[in-house]
Image (tube, rainbow over all chains, first blue to last red; front, side, top):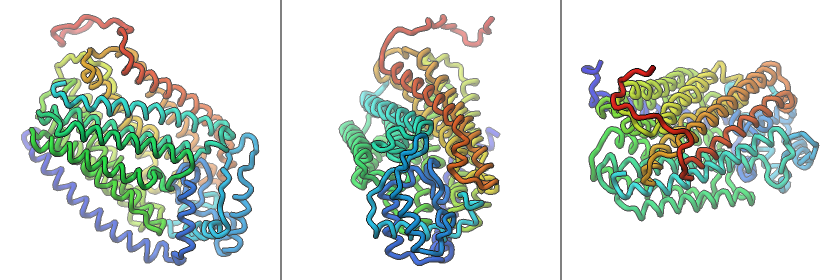
Amino acid sequence: MSELLTKSRARNVFYGGSIFFVVVFVALTAQSHRHIVDKATAGMPLTEEVRLGKHVWERHSCINCHTLHGEGAYFAPEVGNVMTRWGAQDDPELAYEILDGWMKAQPSGIEGRRQMPHFEITEEEMRALAEFLRWADQTDTQNWPPNDAG
Amino acid sequence: MKYQTQKVAYAYFLAAMGLFGIQVLGGLLLGWIYVSPNTLSEVLPFNIVRMIHTNALIVWLLLGFFGAAYYLVPEESEREIFSVKLAYIQLAILVVGTLGAVGSYLVGVHGGREFLEQPLWVKFGILVAAVIFLVNVSLTFLAGRKTAITNILMMGLWLLCLLWVFAFINPDNLSLDKMYWWMVVHLWVEATWELVMAAILGFLMLKLTGVDREVIEKWLYVIVATALFSGILGTGHHFYWIGTPGYWQWIGSIFSTFEVVPFFAMMSFAFVMVWKGRKNHPNKAALLWSLGSSTVAFFGAGVWGFLHTLHGVNFYTHGTQITAAHGHLAFYGAYVALNLAMFSYAMPLLRNRAPYNQVLNMASFWLMTGGMAFMTFTLTFAGTIQTHMQRIVGDYYMDVQDQLGLFYLMRFGSGVAVVLGALLFIYSMLVVRREVVKPGPVIKDAAVPGE
């Protein structure tokens, strides 16, 4: 092997192969971008309200306790399908009411139970957050999670 | 230390160890919140502590890489660093940015993309620091001797700095956000950082074992080729369930299975070099960390990664404690231990003294490694139960978590071991004292068999 695979050959294989895989990856990423916009997330319009909801989600760093589509901190429940779990996926008003009621009741203060902080969120922002969670829920995630428990 | 300007690395390693301390203490607090959830819940909630834990980790690992580059590039290029002043300015920006980020997290000002929560000014600071670093190291590199070690190191560092651009790209579409987010997160730890790791490991093997450079460099190119051939399309294992097309399930499963190969190769490389090397290098602690790093990286990143990477498995395990188990051991083995190997090797040289405190250092290796291994096992068991109860049976998240208390208690215990190990390591690096165990006599001919 040592005659066949010299250092310069190994180097050339490394550079050439890496460029090949980068090109393939970029092409697949471009295709995936189109797939996400045209198909996977096309079930609900990406409105200003949904955008605001995403900013609310980010400003309070929800991802560092919860998971969203399975990504996040594993310390609190999955929220990518929370609206389905609450039976509110098709009812914006109900989605807002349940979310608002839940978040206003935090922190529960119950001894020995994980505490969700209290967040100062206006009604407009709370409605936007509910819409954002409904928007996330309608995403075609290849049928993940396996069940409503998330 | 052959070149005066290598001294810059000393300041980087000190800052890195400081943040390492903050990181593990934050981790210990998180472990305790799992056991006793009301702890500090109003003043310092879990999400804030976790941002400090993960951000401190990432920054100190990067500081370690930068320091390692400032240490080894002069030696490999056979010349002084282009500008010492720029190197210190870069460090100052990074330290101020990090402390600024921690401060702003504590007062509740932060972004909300995992690991990229830094306020915008800190992100720009990191960008500026990265540009300064690239200019400084590249000019040193270009003017001097080029070796495979520096070629690979430079490529890894350039690519990782360029990928930082994706930290600024945050589409409103959540699925697009997630897809581009992985361009930083995955292509750092499972591609470009592996190049940096391989280069540093190659440098350490060169110094510690005395094996011929030609042999080491050929190995390195093979290792990094397998890393990128598997790691780039291996990104697909993050594209199973975020709105990306279904074909990623096959691409991700196949290529991320091959992601085990570079880690196996690095482990084999380290052991074969030590076996072939005839040098009896006095710094045994650096050797232990080097071998330990490649071994634990193989188990943490390779085996524990493969454990849940196939899409049929990942459908059930995605986002459970299995992921946490893998994340902890992989980061510890591949990047924490590798940085500590470099610190162990370079610190005595930077301080111009013999490698003292080796027994304490090696004790810290076993404490930390034992602790991380135990933590990984407890989280794997917790994750297995969670996967079954939540994903198969369909029990609700909090009901399942209530059943996992024993594992979280054991995880906290293992975290105590890790923290003690980390503090012992820092102590053994910084506080000069006599060797606690007297070393045996040096045998001239290493081939003489023992009793």
